[in-house]
Length: 115
Length: 110
Image (tube, rainbow over all chains, first blue to last red; front, side, top):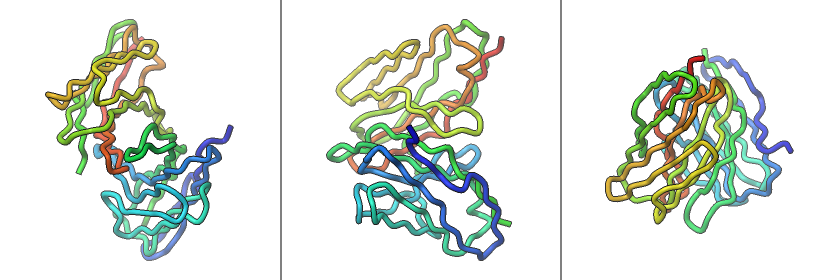
């Protein structure tokens, strides 16, 4: 069972470069989300999606774009990388409730360094 | 801003002892969840307690929820070396934005 798969696991970028972090889930989950984790700050929500074709902003959306063209995939795009975006990024998915997220299944993370 | 705040930030215990950590939050919730994260890995869901529940058990885990005080606790009984990890509470409101605290780092000494 693959669950939630994130690629790449590690990436080094230069300031100003763009890239896409990939996330795929094989559990037919409606809900998908992206978090970033920084030391001492826990996880902060970047963007989320409650179904194909629907996305919305989380707590820290600036500098990131998402799209949800299929149920399975939820890529995160960094438009012009900045050193402040150095972080560990986690994708997570769930069977959402009517108004709530429910239990999240996480990927193993993508570690991004911006020089 | 983060909804949940864990206390303590770090905890060191001997194998076989119990570990207790607390979570406080600010606004109303649909449910509260606890997650574990081993070093360098993704988060793993441990337990979910709904706003109308007061206590829940899962194996060696016991979670309580006091909505009047906006607080929750996670108790790990008879700890093992494999319990060494960071533990996060997450509050699930009616807005699809699961909000995590900064976590409690638990070290279990052999």
